[in-house]
Image (tube, rainbow, N blue to C red):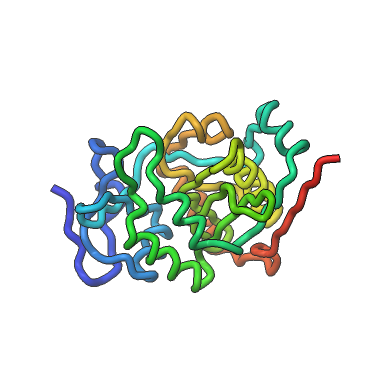
Length: 233
């Protein structure tokens, strides 16, 4: 059995998380900004589907991306150089979340339920949640969103309506955040897609040690000031 959370934003030690399913730690509580930020500060995140209680996770090992290990394939490098596109930051956060919430091919539902959209939009208004967006011909065609505490960034989800649109935003995000002193990006759980971009699995204690250091570091004033436009020659 896993603990049922009470009204206070307090979580069990992550060492108590289950192995099967990997990382399930607790249930219940709410999606208030204080509870979510407390969770992320301890390496915990919410993830649940429609009709389920709020479930809280801290998997081991943890999928992370060290910016210096970013992999840009030949085809993605060509897209970065040849396509006409624009990268914006925080210009359409709600729309990015809505894009990420659409079921993927072969999936019946999504974990980005309306309660999650509302919760992360509140965090965006408070300056903790951010979106990196790919625009083409004046249209939002892909992007991703995540949470930032100090110089720690927690990636949540991405979407694409055109080939490589989410990857373009991802590469620009990684490079920009690296320049702002972000040394590790949380990717939560393993996927082949994230692995292809350079993410890797690390022991949970390694992840938590870096997290504790980075969340205490102040953010540079220009951390959320980014805009890039590329026009093919």
